[in-house]
Length: 169
Length: 237
Image (cartoon, rainbow over all chains, first blue to last red; front, side, top):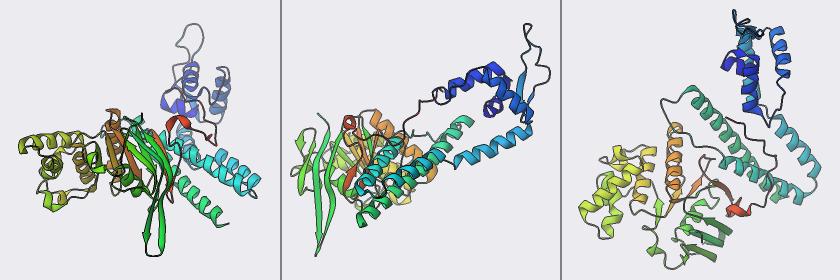
């Protein structure tokens, strides 16, 4: 939510619409919850009302929100943290590996599946056009794609390593 | 009918007492418009796979067919015309400029000088290498060499383009442009099969090759393996 306010200061319902457009299917949050989130962000001093926007609409107040400097700092820190944290995958991998560690056949099958998932993910990497005039969003897209690609490279090397280890056993 | 079909292809190399299995029981199908990347480290068998697909290397077991024809034995008919094998190295004997090198394949097949030159320029343009046309190949940077190599492979208007590590040695920022070019060629109907030493973007399918064994979706429809992690819904842009 904070990221969406940083992207474009706006009023509650509009921010929720963008939230829903981008994350529906991943995170389903009703529109009413957005106001709780805004209250929490306001309390934490991460966003503030844009002065003079509270009473623009005649029917009801419709304040616009924008991020404070502290909000922007916190958001940057969170993004960096999220970039190198992949808890779902790590935790899943740990549990799965522990459950089959004594069963070489199951372990090989697991590695095969993991490899297939990585290969599928590689096939979904979109080629970026090296465009000097690329806008901010395209640059961000490209940076994220490269991060993804390097993660996949590390994973595929791990798969080779795991398979060799199992062959030695 | 698929354009390129490898069926249980096995290739062994013997040197002294040591026998290496470079390709083991590898099956693969490729259609026009497909862009397939085979990911493998050095000595995984990736170059052997390409040379087998080109019909340069005879197989020990299995078959390789191109356009329905068996490639083993009568390779020379397809290679260099319908199959373009891209190499970024240039033999100084083939001429002074990049255009000379690109035109060589046509000259060798009896095309006139003017015609060969026109077609070479056309191929260089298609590969985004027009700026290198008048240069000596030894002057080219890695990405320019690769583009010139692609142009040389394209000059005969092949239906299948084979590339051994098209991003090898290419500057990080130029790499994506080369991959976008290969994607474009595939979208225009040329089948593209490349080996890569790093994950790359733009392929329809990515296979892994390790010790001659090919893994992944060799045939697109027959995906039998489930991803480990369930796919989330695509966020709406």
